[in-house]
Length: 413
Image (cartoon, rainbow, N blue to C red; front, side, top):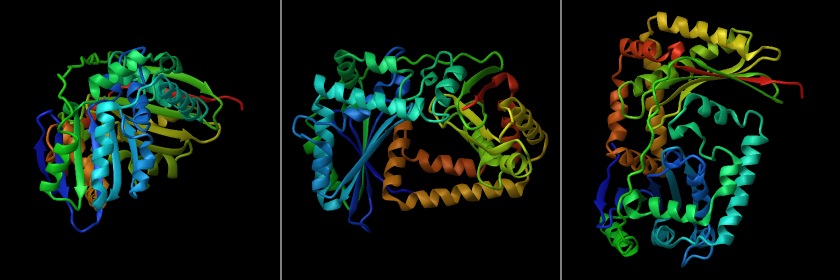
C-alpha cells in the first residue's frame, strides 16, 4: 500500500500528499486531464504542443528551467492520448519553488506570438525527425488511422499531420489553455519529506487564489464496432519488412482489460515468452517479436509486432504469427507460466515503488481514473485472475474480424 492523504481546494484542485521522510528529496507531479483524445480533427497535436509551451515563460518566471536549476531541481513531462503530466524532482527544502513555478504557468502562461511560433518550429522539427525521417517512425500514424475510424485515438499525440501543427492560430492555443489548464482539471501530487500541514499551507498560498473555471464537458465520439478485418500495406525504405497486428480490447477499468494485459504478457513479454520462443528462437521468419497493450482509458488495442528476417515478407510472417495465436487459443494455459507472469508483475511493482517519482505518478494517474487506491486494487485483481478466465477473453478478443494489420514493406534502399 502507498500511504497518501488527499485534500481539495475550493477551486477544484485535487492535492495528494505521499509522505516519505527517509529522503531529503521531494517530487511534484502535476497531471492535467487532457491528452490527444480531447482534440478535434484539423487541430490535432495541441495537447503535445502545450507540453512544449509550458516550459517557456509565465508572468513571473522568465525562463522555467533556469529557475528550477537554481534550487537544484530537474523537470520533464509527457503527453499521452489521455493525460499530460509534468513532474519535478528537487531538494525537499526547496519544494516551494515547485509550487511557485507550477501555479504561475497554470494561471498566466506566456502565449505571445513569438513564443507560439518558436515552439511551432520545435514541434514541427520533432515531427520530421522522429516520425517522418526515422525508420518505421510513422507506424502509429498508419495503425491508429486504420484501427480507429471515429474516436480521436485515430491520430498520434504528436498530431495527425504537419498541416495541423502549421495551422494552429493564437485563438486555438488560448482556447485550449482556458479549457484544459485550470485547477478543476488537474491533480497535484507531492511526495517526499513534507508534512500535510506544510502541503496545505503551500497549496493554499500558491494555488488557492487561482480562480475556478466552469468544467467544460468535451464530447468524445465513441468508436463503432469493427465489422471486419482491416489491412493496410505501406512501403518505405527500411531494412526489412515489419508486421503490426492489433485487436480491439476493453478500456482501462473495464471487464476484460486485465485479461488482455495478461494475454499480451503470456504471449510476448520477455525472452521466455511464447512469441520469442516460437517465432524468433525456433523460427526463421521473425528477427524480433513481442506483444503489448496500449493501456488507454477508452477501448484500446492489443498489439503483436515484429521485424522480419531479410527477404521475408510481412504477409508470410503474419501466417506464422496466426499459427502461434491459434495454438494459444486451443491450448490450456499452464499454471506455472501464468504464475511466472504474475511473479514478474509483482517484481515490477516492487521495483517501481523504489522510485519516489514513480509513486507520485501512480497516485496521480489512478486519482485521475477516479481513486488513488485503484493502483492496489487493480494489482490485486490481476493477481487473482485464473487461466480459464484469460483463455475465455483471449477467444473473445483474438478474432480475425477484429484485427487491423499493417504490412510495413521494405523497398530497395
